[in-house]
Length: 212
Image (cartoon, rainbow, N blue to C red; front, side, top):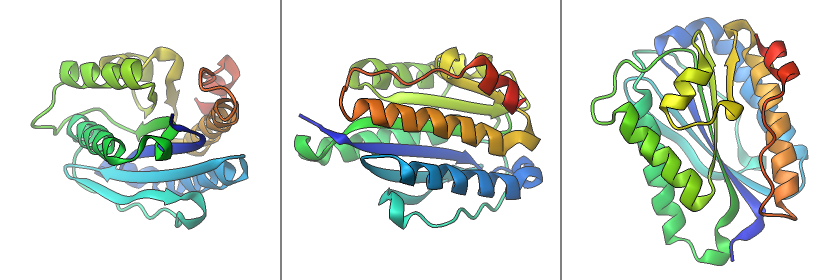
């Protein structure tokens, strides 16, 4: 049996050139997200991956108390699909190597981008959608998609993410998008610590309005 008290948050963050306009707000919003998670009960580890044309794991499976402030250096284009695949596949392999009792009972993949895919070379939307659906349906992973300057519901659907867990946000409101997402993650973690069948709260109408 997996560890119901342990959550693994995999955060995939866009650092393409267009993020330059909201660099500071993104850094502050992410730091606030982590601070909020520290207040929640239970254990939690974080993996942060950033992407532009390239994909980089900044740190992996780091306990919340050891997560440093975010530094974002925007550059290049948006290879979202290849980056999602790298994160999902690599994390799945890490889980497979763990003894079952040490595996997190809850795995959350949060994706934040301010633009559309324009630079992937290996993965297509149908391939990613199939991969996301596999991890969701077979392994119970929870995916969240936050997108600015786009129809995040539509774009999330292309990636296999339910519209209930996809959030449109205005670039200027990136901090609020992080806040409402963190609220839902805290609620989910708390519920899952006692009931592994609990579901992630969906984004409410008020949360959606406040992020626009």
